[in-house]
View (cartoon, protein in one colour):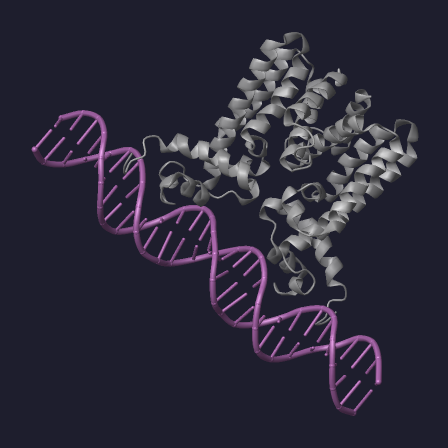
Length: 179
Length: 179
DNA sequence: AACCGAAGTGAGAGACCTCTTACATCGACA
DNA sequence: TGTCGATGTAAGAGGTCTCTCACTTCGGTT
């Protein structure tokens, strides 16, 4: 594949996940994403007007993926929907490593990207509709899942001691207790 | 107050909290802390060998403060200890705005600062001892509190709609349900 | 009173980042 | 086949940051 990449826009979003997982949002840079793809550091600006818009697109993609993962998990175990959703949430974070850092990142709200905001909202309302939980219980469940996920990302769990799968299970268990 | 500051070391740590609250860990910089205190950007390096050691000291201070807040809250309502602790955790975040971003930040584990690690550990064992909870329940409670706290910091709750105090109450309520 | 060390300062090297500009390449379509 | 627009590049302006170095200030000790 030569001068032209093919689908750089999509590749940038995918590579951004990797960079976020490796360095964290804190050290995320457009330049690092470009390097990872072997394109010049100017190339991303053909597809996104600035760094924040790239991150915003990453955020929208993450919200969509997470939503899909939750939908699938709830479909598999509808009777225990919220717990399944919480487990899926944590597993998603383990898999993608980063989406979460960006889905709810306030700084990105500055970007005039209604798409993103909408997809985050869709994520929430989907959970509401699927599980039939009231807003309060949903909020608590989200907090549990987000708490476990954040702790994982921040390196709270000494690796090796617990499988991430075990942690996801405990998150689901905790969500179940909330009801 | 002239050329010499008095207690710049402590002032740096305090100002770091403000900077963290305003800009987030993501955009934290030693230079910004120095600016805020009106000292030269070289001054902090008289007290901390590098940026990570400053953040590590901030982290240790945050862990201590949070621990004290939790101890006080549990003492006030020992029968409902874990819920009180969760509420205190969220309120602490609201008050200091930032400590949490740094207490569990994996990147700082690189710093050879056993003090910090120890104080984070003390925070956990204190909760264990005070409340008599088993490790599993404690973990779930921490996740709830940390989840609510992270969501607040990330701007998930549209301000105005809920008082932060109300949110802290809901976090405590959720923690209570876990038992 | 003189001095010494702790704690400041100003200047700047070196790294990295964001984003711009002028130019190069290539695929699609006339 | 020729050309044109989309998508890439190289170079660089301008910014911020971390951390260093040589020098200054000043409180406390002798």
